[in-house]
Amino acid sequence: MAKVQAGRSKTGLLLVVLIIVVLASTGINVYYLTQDRTAEPTAEAKPTPAPAPELIFVTIDPFTVNLQDGDYDSRLLYTGLSLKVGNAQTRNAIERNMPLIRNRLLLLLSEQNPREVTAVGGKQRLAEKILEQLKRPLDPTQPELIIHDVLFTEFIVQ
Image (cartoon, rainbow, N blue to C red; front, side):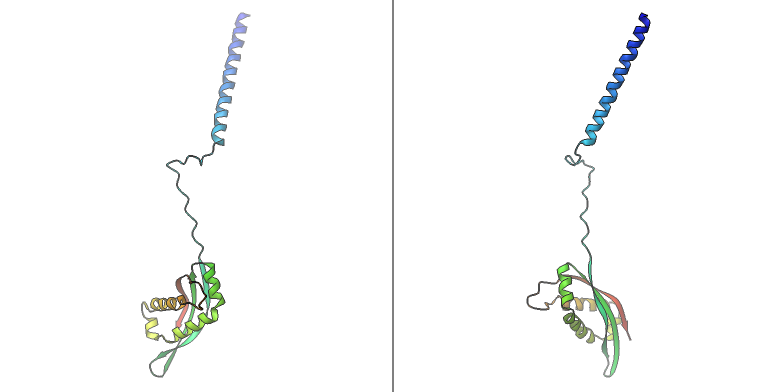
């Protein structure tokens, strides 16, 4: 009977030790899972990139202008534009003053030579001239317009 008692006590002792090991490992896991991992950044942690700024485009409806080609020849330019602007304030100012902007563009475009605007780099030079025109204040109280780029969405010379 003593042998049976000794076997039971060894089994009981082994069971108690096993329960203690399981409880200890569970406690350690719970501890690590509940720790705030942002408190100590590791060397591997990489900063999250800042979100890209929102792209804001203002579309200017297409229009047609006469181009002068020689003394009596007349050619047509049909063009549509989009402006890449820096903020909503600039977009709102452009939309509010669209008649003034279209007038400036009409006058500028009608001065162009058809050979120059169709040449290599001619559209880029024209875009730079348009940008200069649009950066001029529309009225004395207007804040500075932030226009990054002029994009031609349509461009036909006939």
